[in-house]
Length: 472
Ligand code: BGP
Image 1 (tube, rainbow, N blue to C red):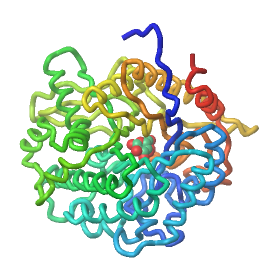
Image 2: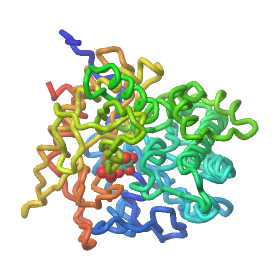
Image 3: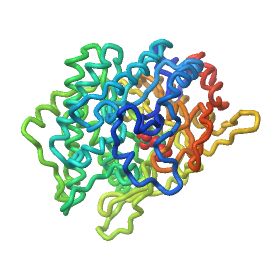
Image 4: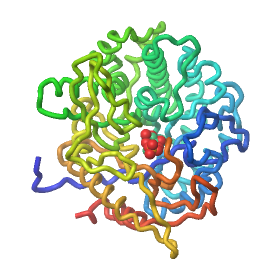
């Protein structure tokens, strides 16, 4: 749709950026923190370990001052479960509470709204040993942890996100380092979707609890949502796109918002003999929980074609954003209309608008962009500058799509791209940089950890100052 006049960004739009605890904090064995599944996983070859990352744990004041200089209205970060509960359950680590109190207070000092993710890929290792999300008790573990967070920080934190990218935990657990396969598993799909079910119920319980403990807070899920395109106008490709849309996207949000399994997903699970078992009370819990908004991460769309045989040769895909498929359901395809990043992810700003429109049409809840961004090799010049015009271009094109979506009638709360500051990527090290702030460290060796402003820093500052108007 062409528009003659664009609606402005809302006055209270959350311009900010994101990080996650295990990727940015470092200090992963300090001040009583217990290990998470990320700390004990086998690292992908040649990538930095998680002992230091950007050392945000020790540099957070400096980092938040830089975010404030950019004019951030919000900072989306996650809490490390194992800083609060080193064993995942039981004894609380006061130093962990203290750290997040300081981080939150530091944000508020600059009028930056903290948007807190409760769980971002870092299951406590101690709970992994007890079966992780395959254990039905995991629902209670999460609710107990949630209660501590709401009671400790709820007086100041009014924006909560439950589970980051639950769909990626389910679809690409091995890439992210979170797959837990209990001994004796015979049907892996069934096992994974049972774990997924426990997460859905845990999320529902957390949403209910949040509304009870902090009545003036808002809470929502944060899946990775990307509209799935059919590779052609062949009707069978359209059906394949519907299949993958359901499995990749709608399962998570239909449950969070409506409290029901998407029917295509249920049919797919039946086909795999993989429907999850409901515990007593699950159905009611899922029905009674309601998010106030939808947080979502968007990097690019997906494209699929039909898979018409159980023997189809399928490319299993490399990670969160690359083509995947399942024989008999859909088959990942390249989209010839899109360029790719240096790390092979397609770039699709128009797809961002299409995704926002579709999300709003389905759920009619305000949308908060909790991630979006460009991973690239950046070069630190001798004079301390970093010329990341490619990142500016990517962000510029995506922000424009938000404004178009707003003009299309979509209710948008904010934009928190990935990432505020350089950090360690899920599986490709710190060489894959995303931040507005460069951190001097490499995968091979911990560096000075000095912070440098990239060109995108000044650019984003102006975008925020003018509430997006400078782009036009
Ligand atoms: C999302 C995750 C983030 C993040 C980002 C970029 O899937 O929520 O944790 O890392 O993608 O991905 P990557 O680190 O693989 O480049």
